[in-house]
Image 1 (cartoon, helix red, strand yellow):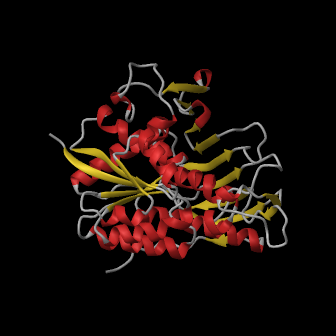
Image 2 (cartoon, one colour):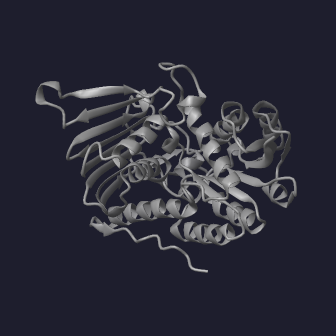
Length: 395
């Protein structure tokens, strides 16, 4: 029988629900040496977390995440709370010998991310594992894209084009939620969705972003304050609006370590685009294209074929020999967004059981954080900005 990995989760909203679905499903879909047990979930509201525990499948609940870390019957802390909480929770969990899964971006600042990466590296010496949750790596079509690039199918990489487009705050009447406040979220579209395309492109190409030239924009400077129950009240002057302190859109050029050039765009103001993540990789021998709105497909242009046969081929990524797909349905039957999280938990459980470092590590996530920080500095100075290397901590 599989040994149990007892999980405590912090946060139960959007990401908490996605992670819960994955924890409920992973051992039903995959044969693994560890079996996830959903031990307890924490959240600030007693009523809210109690309802979430019952709905999402957690055995117990608490309003204090510290109690999860103090419990001997919890082995892993899953952090799904806002970015301003990541560092404190992760550092405490690692110090207590708990494995950690932390949602992206890793932290709100490079300093926090460095401290977290150093703590994770130190804890690894005792067999404690830490992983950052960039779930799009686990979409089968993205994993196949990486395999094909690694196999040399598109040759030397020349261009990378990546965008992540949403429109959920186009309406000026949309309230000033926590994602629009720098002190909680760290940054806006850049960190929230830009982090995904930074990680994904570096993952599939095997190249790191080395320098950037960026611009950011906040189109709507003030928004209505949410109700007091959301943690905000009227401003000091009695008004019912507050300042938006993050970017609405971030665009940047980049150079990669292998010689490729790249363009990136992350925005919440692409009217009509709900959640379009698109990555195109152009190589000397061909091109690969992934579009999250068609997540079971990968486009491939094979430039080595005879000219009369050339053209983009649609690969339906549902075969049992495609990454992760053997666990699911017969060929041609599609999977969805939630499966990427199930695959994430599958890889994490496997790595912990095998005593190896799961990917992406906190060190990998620190490197993404350094890119985001360089984009912010470049936008402020209107200049090309080098990305500082994420050096391995020494102990």
